[in-house]
Length: 327
Image 1 (cartoon, rainbow, N blue to C red):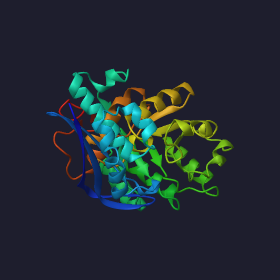
Image 2 (spheres, rainbow, N blue to C red; image 1 turned 180 degrees about the vertical axis):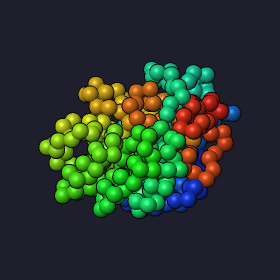
Image 3 (tube, rainbow, N blue to C red; image 1 turned 135 degrees about the horizontal axis):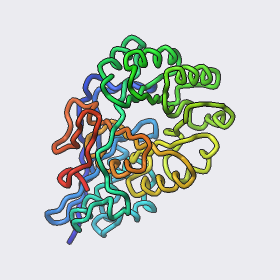
């Protein structure tokens, strides 16, 4: 039966604003790939990311270029050769897996030989702000067991101390989004240690992180912007203790599953992360959660509204997707 590809752009308002070192947003703009076969429909969502040179228009065009291949029956593994890692390949990869699950009646985790997903605790993100505002935000979220704190460079020791005051019992991880520099990293590491931080994401700019090979630290450091897919693992082995796997960076669940296995074989801890998107983007990433030391799939919790049906969140506990949503 003939398959047909369509692409749509959807907008979801963020509850308030989402602010990191590179800027602030008030809405999530997502691109959805849909592959139809008769009455069956598979969907995949991605978030184009300017940091990686992506726009909504460029990602949409890259997906649409695969229309003939989709009609001809292209598989997720074929996409690894046909498309570069990135948001476009992620949306199409996840749509094809969703369709295959609906066509065969088998869950995607089973087809990929992964462990069955189970309810798991996700981090909840606190946006970058001034210390007073971040302390207030931490106080409101202090009931959550795991908080991810966005930092931004100058003034970060005061920010992380303020968050700890606001949420004295929560586990903390921090994400500097490449905002630290050689002259500030030692001071910032000490401030994080004093606050009992458990993990630090991407403190230095990608391409300027060789310094991590020589810095003593008591807190594990996780690569985010410095890593996209398996091709980047060799360069990271001496610099990082963990990697943040995001499907939009890896270019889909197919690559992400192989990346997680290879990283684990090298002794790297796994964090499963996300861009700010809806439950449709989080659902396939949930399949990697059983391998992860940290799960950061709070995108829908940051939105003013999610798509329906969505993932079920009970506080910070997120449940695996239903078949009606994905996979």
